[in-house]
Image 1: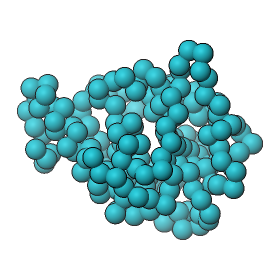
Image 2: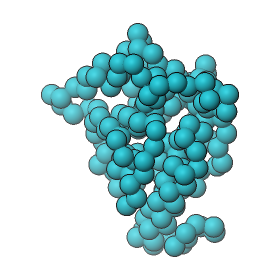
Image 3: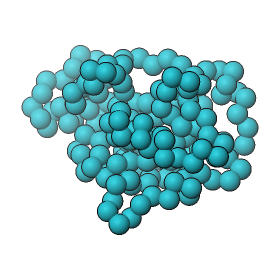
Image 4: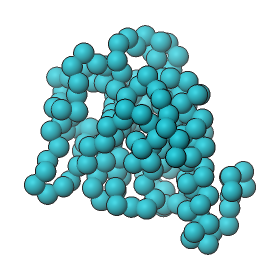
Length: 182
């Protein structure tokens, strides 16, 4: 498992049910990225303090493709100053939208989306009919960090992602997809 250093701090908001799935990739990203935080949502009797997710004096970017989201393009990324925290909800689309709404509105929070990304190479779960362009959480994190911090961060994440997908497919007895690593 690579340990990857980045200037951007990942804050993963992961649904408890999602955490238990063997095909979850958000938790894998958090384990790879040094200094990341993972907040488990949906544990009975242990609500997440969403105020604690927001750190003082940091810019908070919430990765979610909302209609008004700012694309993570070159000019926007170059304009960011000070510590940056990338908040990523990890669940299905409806759950992620709910988590997005629960974050404090008074915080310096900017909804962001990927300016561009290739098609998902995940293929381990059924695609959402409403969001066929969707990516696995680790893919989305890798592409966001590539825009924010460069390919030295995204490349090892995408490599571990490809390995994870290939080994999961192999374990399930599914043939490798062309172009995937063994």
